[in-house]
Image (cartoon, rainbow, N blue to C red; front, side, top):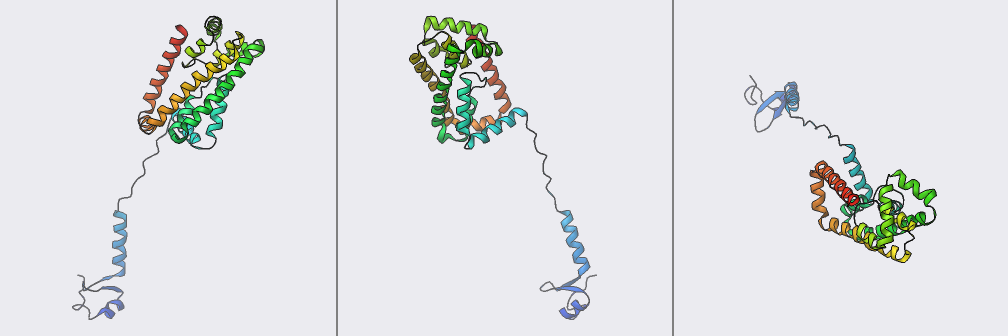
Length: 250
Protein backbone atom coordinates (compact mmCIF):
# COMPACT_ATOMS: atom_id res chain seq x y z
CA UNK A 1 0.00 0.00 0.00
CA UNK A 2 1.21 3.49 -0.82
CA UNK A 3 1.94 5.37 2.41
CA UNK A 4 0.10 8.65 2.95
CA UNK A 5 2.09 11.69 4.01
CA UNK A 6 1.08 12.58 7.59
CA UNK A 7 0.22 8.92 8.31
CA UNK A 8 3.14 6.78 7.15
CA UNK A 9 5.69 9.63 7.05
CA UNK A 10 5.96 12.80 9.07
CA UNK A 11 6.91 15.36 6.47
CA UNK A 12 8.19 16.10 3.01
CA UNK A 13 11.84 15.79 4.14
CA UNK A 14 11.21 12.27 5.30
CA UNK A 15 9.71 11.43 1.88
CA UNK A 16 12.79 12.68 0.07
CA UNK A 17 15.12 10.75 2.38
CA UNK A 18 13.39 7.58 1.30
CA UNK A 19 13.85 8.36 -2.39
CA UNK A 20 10.27 9.43 -2.97
CA UNK A 21 8.54 12.40 -4.56
CA UNK A 22 6.29 14.46 -2.35
CA UNK A 23 3.05 15.67 -4.05
CA UNK A 24 1.62 18.68 -2.15
CA UNK A 25 -2.13 18.90 -1.81
CA UNK A 26 -2.61 15.21 -2.61
CA UNK A 27 -0.63 14.10 0.41
CA UNK A 28 0.90 11.04 -1.27
CA UNK A 29 4.41 9.98 -2.19
CA UNK A 30 5.63 7.67 -4.91
CA UNK A 31 9.04 6.13 -5.50
CA UNK A 32 10.95 7.65 -8.41
CA UNK A 33 11.18 4.29 -10.18
CA UNK A 34 7.39 3.89 -10.08
CA UNK A 35 6.83 7.35 -11.54
CA UNK A 36 9.31 6.76 -14.35
CA UNK A 37 7.67 3.46 -15.13
CA UNK A 38 4.25 5.10 -15.35
CA UNK A 39 5.63 7.78 -17.68
CA UNK A 40 7.15 5.15 -19.99
CA UNK A 41 3.94 3.14 -20.13
CA UNK A 42 1.94 6.31 -20.86
CA UNK A 43 4.27 7.24 -23.72
CA UNK A 44 4.17 3.78 -25.24
CA UNK A 45 0.39 3.68 -25.09
CA UNK A 46 0.04 6.87 -27.16
CA UNK A 47 -1.19 6.35 -30.71
CA UNK A 48 1.56 7.12 -33.22
CA UNK A 49 0.16 8.38 -36.55
CA UNK A 50 1.31 6.29 -39.48
CA UNK A 51 1.99 8.25 -42.65
CA UNK A 52 0.17 6.89 -45.67
CA UNK A 53 2.43 5.84 -48.55
CA UNK A 54 2.77 8.49 -51.28
CA UNK A 55 0.51 8.04 -54.29
CA UNK A 56 2.57 7.30 -57.37
CA UNK A 57 1.47 9.48 -60.29
CA UNK A 58 1.52 8.34 -63.88
CA UNK A 59 3.77 9.81 -66.55
CA UNK A 60 1.04 11.97 -68.10
CA UNK A 61 0.02 13.42 -64.72
CA UNK A 62 3.66 14.14 -63.82
CA UNK A 63 4.10 15.89 -67.17
CA UNK A 64 0.99 17.97 -66.44
CA UNK A 65 2.29 18.95 -63.00
CA UNK A 66 5.71 19.81 -64.47
CA UNK A 67 4.08 21.98 -67.15
CA UNK A 68 2.15 23.92 -64.50
CA UNK A 69 5.32 24.49 -62.48
CA UNK A 70 7.16 25.77 -65.56
CA UNK A 71 4.16 27.95 -66.45
CA UNK A 72 4.44 29.73 -63.10
CA UNK A 73 8.10 30.64 -63.65
CA UNK A 74 9.88 33.25 -65.75
CA UNK A 75 10.72 30.80 -68.55
CA UNK A 76 7.09 30.17 -69.49
CA UNK A 77 6.68 33.05 -71.96
CA UNK A 78 9.95 32.40 -73.87
CA UNK A 79 9.12 28.67 -74.10
CA UNK A 80 5.61 29.52 -75.31
CA UNK A 81 7.01 31.80 -78.01
CA UNK A 82 9.54 29.20 -79.14
CA UNK A 83 6.92 26.45 -79.43
CA UNK A 84 4.50 28.80 -81.24
CA UNK A 85 7.15 29.73 -83.81
CA UNK A 86 8.32 26.16 -84.37
CA UNK A 87 4.82 24.64 -84.57
CA UNK A 88 3.88 26.97 -87.42
CA UNK A 89 6.69 25.65 -89.60
CA UNK A 90 8.04 22.24 -88.56
CA UNK A 91 7.37 21.25 -84.90
CA UNK A 92 4.55 18.72 -84.21
CA UNK A 93 3.35 19.97 -80.78
CA UNK A 94 0.91 22.93 -80.74
CA UNK A 95 1.37 25.73 -78.18
CA UNK A 96 -2.17 25.44 -76.79
CA UNK A 97 -1.29 23.17 -73.81
CA UNK A 98 1.44 25.56 -72.67
CA UNK A 99 -0.88 28.55 -73.13
CA UNK A 100 -3.55 26.78 -71.07
CA UNK A 101 -1.01 26.04 -68.33
CA UNK A 102 0.08 29.69 -68.23
CA UNK A 103 -3.54 30.85 -68.02
CA UNK A 104 -4.26 28.31 -65.25
CA UNK A 105 -1.23 29.11 -63.12
CA UNK A 106 -0.98 32.86 -63.84
CA UNK A 107 -4.35 34.28 -64.96
CA UNK A 108 -2.94 37.80 -64.72
CA UNK A 109 -0.73 37.25 -67.76
CA UNK A 110 -3.03 35.03 -69.84
CA UNK A 111 -3.93 37.72 -72.42
CA UNK A 112 -0.32 38.86 -72.75
CA UNK A 113 0.74 35.26 -73.29
CA UNK A 114 -1.93 34.82 -75.99
CA UNK A 115 -0.77 37.94 -77.85
CA UNK A 116 2.84 36.79 -77.65
CA UNK A 117 1.78 33.36 -78.86
CA UNK A 118 -0.02 34.94 -81.82
CA UNK A 119 2.96 37.09 -82.81
CA UNK A 120 5.42 34.20 -82.71
CA UNK A 121 3.01 31.92 -84.56
CA UNK A 122 2.68 34.48 -87.38
CA UNK A 123 6.48 34.80 -87.57
CA UNK A 124 6.74 31.02 -87.64
CA UNK A 125 4.11 31.01 -90.37
CA UNK A 126 6.28 33.34 -92.43
CA UNK A 127 9.15 30.91 -91.96
CA UNK A 128 6.91 28.08 -93.13
CA UNK A 129 5.83 30.22 -96.09
CA UNK A 130 9.52 30.75 -96.98
CA UNK A 131 10.12 27.00 -96.80
CA UNK A 132 7.25 26.37 -99.20
CA UNK A 133 8.21 29.18 -101.57
CA UNK A 134 11.94 28.57 -101.87
CA UNK A 135 13.00 25.43 -100.03
CA UNK A 136 10.18 22.99 -100.61
CA UNK A 137 12.18 20.23 -102.25
CA UNK A 138 15.03 20.54 -99.79
CA UNK A 139 13.13 21.16 -96.54
CA UNK A 140 9.38 21.30 -97.07
CA UNK A 141 8.84 17.93 -98.70
CA UNK A 142 10.79 16.01 -96.00
CA UNK A 143 8.69 17.75 -93.32
CA UNK A 144 5.41 16.83 -95.03
CA UNK A 145 6.56 13.26 -95.63
CA UNK A 146 7.81 12.89 -92.06
CA UNK A 147 4.30 13.60 -90.76
CA UNK A 148 2.67 11.61 -93.60
CA UNK A 149 0.59 14.58 -94.72
CA UNK A 150 1.10 14.25 -98.47
CA UNK A 151 -2.59 13.84 -99.34
CA UNK A 152 -3.73 16.64 -97.02
CA UNK A 153 -0.97 18.87 -98.36
CA UNK A 154 -2.17 18.37 -101.94
CA UNK A 155 -5.71 19.33 -100.87
CA UNK A 156 -4.49 22.52 -99.22
CA UNK A 157 -2.28 23.47 -102.13
CA UNK A 158 -5.20 23.17 -104.52
CA UNK A 159 -7.44 24.98 -102.02
CA UNK A 160 -5.15 28.00 -101.99
CA UNK A 161 -5.46 28.27 -105.74
CA UNK A 162 -9.26 28.29 -105.47
CA UNK A 163 -10.00 30.06 -102.16
CA UNK A 164 -6.86 32.05 -101.36
CA UNK A 165 -6.68 33.43 -97.83
CA UNK A 166 -10.15 32.19 -96.96
CA UNK A 167 -8.84 28.66 -96.57
CA UNK A 168 -6.58 29.91 -93.77
CA UNK A 169 -9.55 31.58 -92.11
CA UNK A 170 -11.58 28.38 -92.45
CA UNK A 171 -8.87 26.00 -91.28
CA UNK A 172 -6.77 28.16 -88.97
CA UNK A 173 -9.14 27.67 -86.01
CA UNK A 174 -9.18 23.89 -86.39
CA UNK A 175 -6.69 21.45 -84.80
CA UNK A 176 -4.95 20.67 -88.11
CA UNK A 177 -1.15 21.12 -88.16
CA UNK A 178 -0.59 24.79 -88.97
CA UNK A 179 2.67 24.00 -90.73
CA UNK A 180 0.54 22.29 -93.38
CA UNK A 181 -1.18 25.61 -94.10
CA UNK A 182 1.93 27.77 -94.08
CA UNK A 183 4.11 25.55 -96.27
CA UNK A 184 1.25 25.01 -98.72
CA UNK A 185 0.71 28.78 -98.85
CA UNK A 186 4.34 29.27 -99.86
CA UNK A 187 4.17 26.59 -102.52
CA UNK A 188 1.00 28.19 -103.95
CA UNK A 189 2.74 31.62 -103.93
CA UNK A 190 -0.18 33.14 -102.04
CA UNK A 191 -0.33 36.93 -101.68
CA UNK A 192 1.97 37.62 -98.73
CA UNK A 193 0.06 40.50 -97.01
CA UNK A 194 -3.18 38.52 -97.24
CA UNK A 195 -1.36 35.47 -95.85
CA UNK A 196 -0.03 37.42 -92.85
CA UNK A 197 -3.41 39.03 -92.15
CA UNK A 198 -5.26 35.72 -92.33
CA UNK A 199 -2.73 34.02 -90.03
CA UNK A 200 -2.91 36.86 -87.50
CA UNK A 201 -6.72 36.82 -87.43
CA UNK A 202 -7.18 33.09 -87.10
CA UNK A 203 -4.33 32.39 -84.69
CA UNK A 204 -5.11 35.47 -82.62
CA UNK A 205 -8.78 34.52 -82.31
CA UNK A 206 -7.88 30.97 -81.31
CA UNK A 207 -5.25 31.85 -78.71
CA UNK A 208 -7.17 34.79 -77.22
CA UNK A 209 -10.26 32.63 -76.81
CA UNK A 210 -8.24 29.95 -75.00
CA UNK A 211 -6.62 32.56 -72.74
CA UNK A 212 -9.94 34.27 -71.96
CA UNK A 213 -11.67 30.96 -71.24
CA UNK A 214 -9.03 29.75 -68.80
CA UNK A 215 -8.63 33.18 -67.24
CA UNK A 216 -12.36 33.38 -66.47
CA UNK A 217 -12.92 29.79 -65.37
CA UNK A 218 -9.38 28.67 -64.59
CA UNK A 219 -9.79 28.20 -60.83
CA UNK A 220 -12.84 25.99 -61.19
CA UNK A 221 -11.33 24.24 -64.20
CA UNK A 222 -8.15 23.43 -62.28
CA UNK A 223 -10.17 21.90 -59.43
CA UNK A 224 -12.11 19.74 -61.87
CA UNK A 225 -8.92 18.74 -63.75
CA UNK A 226 -7.11 17.79 -60.53
CA UNK A 227 -10.09 15.68 -59.44
CA UNK A 228 -10.87 13.96 -62.73
CA UNK A 229 -7.56 14.21 -64.58
CA UNK A 230 -7.41 10.95 -66.56
CA UNK A 231 -11.07 10.79 -67.67
CA UNK A 232 -10.78 14.38 -68.92
CA UNK A 233 -7.45 13.69 -70.61
CA UNK A 234 -8.61 10.63 -72.54
CA UNK A 235 -11.94 12.28 -73.33
CA UNK A 236 -10.09 15.30 -74.71
CA UNK A 237 -7.83 13.08 -76.81
CA UNK A 238 -10.87 11.31 -78.22
CA UNK A 239 -12.57 14.58 -79.14
CA UNK A 240 -9.33 15.88 -80.67
CA UNK A 241 -8.97 12.75 -82.78
CA UNK A 242 -12.56 13.13 -83.99
CA UNK A 243 -11.93 16.77 -84.86
CA UNK A 244 -8.76 16.03 -86.81
CA UNK A 245 -10.45 13.19 -88.64
CA UNK A 246 -13.40 15.38 -89.56
CA UNK A 247 -11.12 18.13 -90.87
CA UNK A 248 -9.19 15.79 -93.13
CA UNK A 249 -12.23 13.87 -94.32
CA UNK A 250 -14.44 16.87 -95.02
